[in-house]
Amino acid sequence: MKKVFFIALVALCTVATAQSSLPKMATDIAPLLIGEKIPNTTLKSVENAAVKISDLLEKKKTILVFYRGGWCPYCNMHLQALAEAEKQILDLGYQIIAISPDAPENLKITEEKDKVKYTLLSDSEGEFTKAIGIAYEAPENYKSVINVHSKGVNKSFLPVPSVFVVNPNGEIAFEYIAPDFKHRISTELLVSVLKNLK
Image (tube, rainbow, N blue to C red; front, side):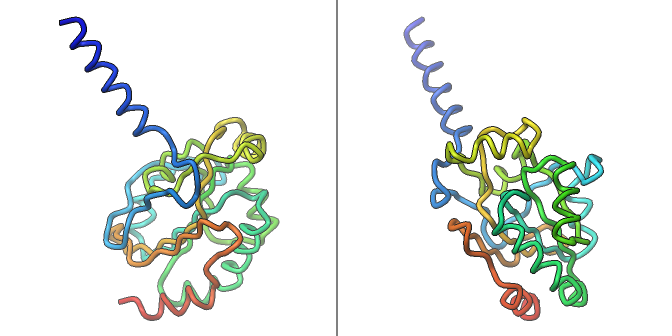
């Protein structure tokens, strides 16, 4: 009987470990698909206040942007481009929310540096990023950077840079996921997509 119990315990531990482990590479992720609902979770604002994602999404159609952090030059270029296209995006009835593992105080630096007026949120623990299915194991050479920028909270994951267009019911209407972090959706293409979504 003890042997059977031990085998069952080992099997349960193996399953738990498999579920909690992150994909090793950006190309191994399994993101939510178009038509699926964005999970609800609580993130931190620039002011370090708790923000429920569902409260933001139900207000209007949303562009959800996941970026690696304010330390990433490609992310900063993308955030700046979105800031420049923000009026067009707002005129189409959308809001922009950008999420990274950076700590709230580092979001503030990014907000000022990239002249961002839209909402930046912190997911340093990675709960939301993992639930979306776009988190992967950070390469060793990034671990000290993400540790510093998350104020010691994130030691292990990076988000694959992604853009999700979400309706007020929290359903994904469009997504663009870029395992090669140097490539992002252009604002021209994004605006064109928004114009064509029902």
